[in-house]
Amino acid sequence: MSTLRWAWRYLWARPLGAGLNVLLLSLGLGSMAFLLLVSSQLAKAFDRDLAGIDAVVGAKGSPMQLILSGVLHVDVPPGNVPLQAVRALEQHPLVAAIIPLSLGDSLQGFRIVGTSPAYVAHYEATYAQGRPWEAPMEVVLGATVARRLGLGLGARFVGSHGLGGSGHAHGDHAFTVVGILQPSASVLDRLVLTDTASVWKVHEDSTAADAEDRALLEEEREITMALVRYRSPLAALSFPRFVNTSTEMQAAAPALEVTRLLSMLGLGTDVLRAFAGVLLLTAGLSVFIALWSAVRERRADLAVLRMLGAPPRRVAALLLCEALWLALVASVVGLALGQGFAWALGVLLA
Image (cartoon, rainbow, N blue to C red; front, side, top):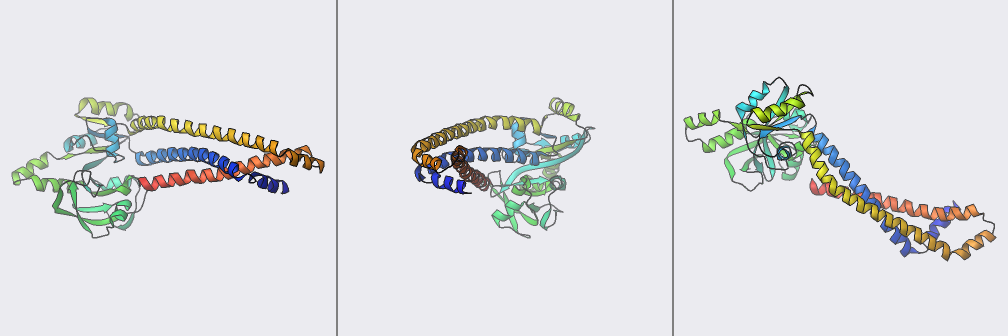
């Protein structure tokens, strides 16, 4: 214990040099910890939101855009597809289940998604308040939506056209909140969920001039996309090809597109990781030089210790403990910085 105490006092006998070394080591370790945490959480978020979704079927365009808009809800969809075409896919022998999604409106930046109750069940979400929707124009709010907008059960609101929150408001069609979901750390937290018929009602009522127009619109109903679950893993080889070649729609594989996305993000992560490695190497060299200089400056003190009977291993232990104290303090500060930056980023992106 006396060796550790002496090493601690020796370390902070030169506070500016010790502080600089701690700062350099902490920044390097903090950068590494931050990058590892962000990469891990990003992979977990993708795995959580993509779990159980084997394919996304939608309008032809960019497969990446289809995944980002239909699964992660961070992009605009490429277009709509006929409802009849999606219903035909439900009869395909390789398809176990299909969840329809209809996008197009939003509430102060949060997307209003027309879907089926199977969408909530897919993410195993539970209700904090209220119940599922049972009729058109009833909605269930994600936890983040309810908290940010301050909406409770029975609240009424109108959506606006578009996904940016600044479009034309559908003032004649008010939604009623009948349920609020528990926080699930999934994409549901950021969505306003309702029946697909609600989306059709809002837009058909505003465009149909008479009963004949309404009947025509009902025959030509569309949805934005469909989330598909296969009966067998072997369907991944043939089902996307069938959709892409035999229909006017396209099928995108979430696992493939997310792998491409992570590979693109990984390039920037590798550069940052390399920068953090250089910072750590520089800090290590700085610590080595500082300890070497300390040995040279303390030759008289070390000589006195030897004269008092301290064996060489005790002197070596004293110098080693000084380095260990420096590493320990820098590790604690660096990990705290990494965790703090990751937490701040999570709050910012929530």
